[in-house]
Image 1 (cartoon, rainbow, N blue to C red):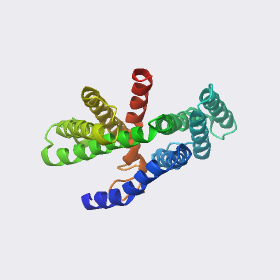
Image 2: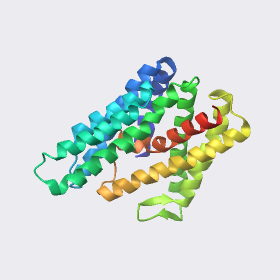
Image 3: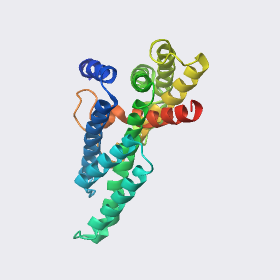
Image 4: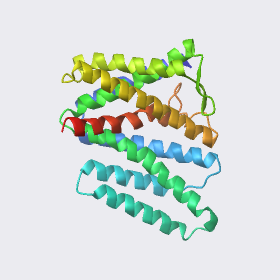
Length: 265
C-alpha cells in the first residue's frame, strides 16, 4: 500500500503543481469543478451503498452552480444559487413515489453539496487572491505533509487510540505527528512559497491548519464509518477515492481563507 501511495503521489503531484503555477485562476476553477464532480459522485455513491436515497444528478448540478457562483464573487449569487437548489430539490421530491423518504433524500443530497462543494469552493476563493498561487501551494503542502506525518508516525509509534468508534487505526501519536509535520512544512514554506509570513505567523498557521486538516480527515472517517465503507472510492491507488485525498483540504482551505481575509484585509 505504501509503495502505491508513493507512486500515485509521484505521478499526480508534479502535474498538479505545474497547473497551479502556470495556469490561470480559470484553469484552477475548472480543476476544482472536476474535483467537485468526482467528490460529490463519491459521496453520493457511498450514501447509496448504505441504502440511502439521493438525487445524485441534481446534487452534482447544484454543487457546480454553487461553485460557479462563489468563483464569480458577485453580490449574493451564492445565496441565490443555494436557495434555488434547496427549493428545486424539495420541489422534485413532491413527485417521488415514496414521500416517506423525502426528508432522507433531501438531507443527504443537500448535505453532500454543503460538505463537498461548499468547502471545496474556498480553494477557488484562495486562488483568485493576489498571492493565490502561493496560498494554494501552501495549504496543499500543509495538509498533505500533515496527512503523511500522521500516517507514518501513527503506523510506527501509535499506541493510544484517538477515536476507536470512528477510526480504529487513528492514534493520538499520529495526530501529534501530523500536526508536527504541518508545523515543519509551514516553517519551510515561509522561505520559498509564502515569503511574507513571519516566524510566529508560520507557526500559528502550521498548527491551526495542521490540526484542522486532521479534524477533516477524522470527519471523513466518521462519514465513511456511518455509511459502512472503508474508502470513499478507488480512484487513486494506495489512497482510495478523491475524498480520501482532499478531506484535510476541505477543512484547511476555509480556515486559511478566513484568516487571510480577517487578518490581512
